[in-house]
Image (cartoon, rainbow, N blue to C red):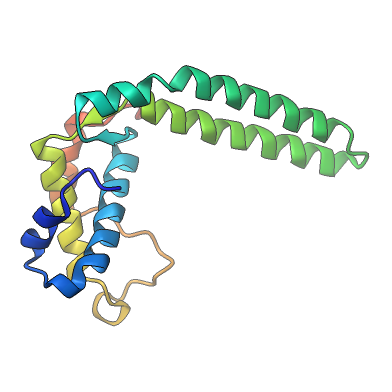
Length: 161
């Protein structure tokens, strides 16, 4: 579910009521793109953020249990290459799970800059929703418009080296 009100998105796009489901889908995508760019989950209010962050310790514990079970299952695989690949898959899944937990623990409450960035991205997705118009293959990643990035950069965390 979106943290940005669908009515605001509809007004921003000047979309018709019959476009509601399409707009909602693109709004969800725009918000997800912003969250992935920030490496943080976006929450509608402080209470939602607090409720989500309260789950992180339990999630990490469950992820460790899942990793242990996957490594135990991999250990009984006779073929060396298959065993190594199963262990690699288990560790990769564990890393992805930990990243998801970190995004929750580093969550942020929706603010005006994030809203504007999401609406800019939504406008881009709306204006370029046809392959023939944009020339972008549907399987490719759509880069965030630079205007939205400039609004999101101050809130970005865990950038790495």
